[in-house]
Image (cartoon, rainbow, N blue to C red; front, side, top):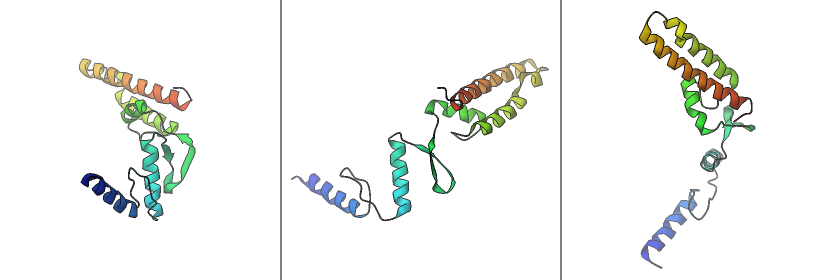
Length: 135
């Protein structure tokens, strides 16, 4: 057994005593908050993430949207995975500000508003389709 193998064994043994994940497995730390955080991180890294409700309650019926929609939620200015009503409210507010008719007096602003409104509409359509069960 080489020096690095022995050093690795010693480090793994030391880390396991404190409940740290190593290549040899996970030993619970005894701290329920730490263990819950570890399980949540492990689920996220394995792609099994679920939306967390306030105060640590997990709603297993609700899945987060696909990562492709992350930019769409950002364009609407809402948190990733926000409910449909929140997204719809944000969509309407943004469209009121960036609607092309509000900028009809200035050609440059009109073009920018048209492009921005088209991006907002496209984002809302993708999010609404996902909320309605489509992909």
